[in-house]
Length: 229
Image 1 (cartoon, one colour):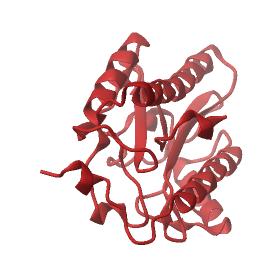
Image 2 (cartoon, rainbow, N blue to C red; image 1 turned 30 degrees about the vertical axis):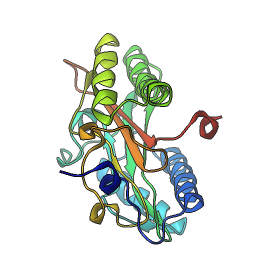
Image 3 (cartoon, one colour; image 1 turned 90 degrees about the vertical axis):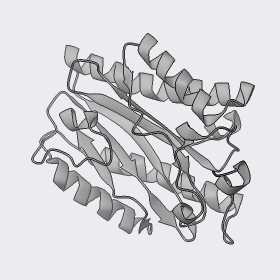
């Protein structure tokens, strides 16, 4: 059984400034990739484009695959491959999940975006808003009450259901550190029986519609409010 100390160890290159640099570069890359995605693109082409954007920004393709998920593929757990040949429709939803490395430090980030202006797109937009809002709700509870990782995800599931969504527990958060974090601790945040420390963990929220083929994803490092102004 891992202790809190085991789970939150860092490697010799870890610095908070380095981790914040990786986070900033990751959020910049998400915006740059999303700005290049257009209806009609195949998901496979968007993934290739995303990888090139990361390389052009001087970022290393790091510890998990660069993912772009369009339409019905937004339902799938990250460890399952997308259905091939899915194109982004005129009114649609998509999300990004990237894990670039900046020098010795791991970045990891995800966000959801929509295109179009139909009634269906309004439902997609609500899903995209809700997933980011729920991320911040969970983060706020962590700040106020210092809940365990297990309790944070139990809270996230409860709040997701109130909003009409299902929470995907296959994405349960994870460590982040100087590369590679997996040699330090590979367990999920959702399994942690202690309150996670800041600048050590990625909080992942993946919402899925209970009956329709779409979902939304958001992830970022667990940090206090000052990093979100």
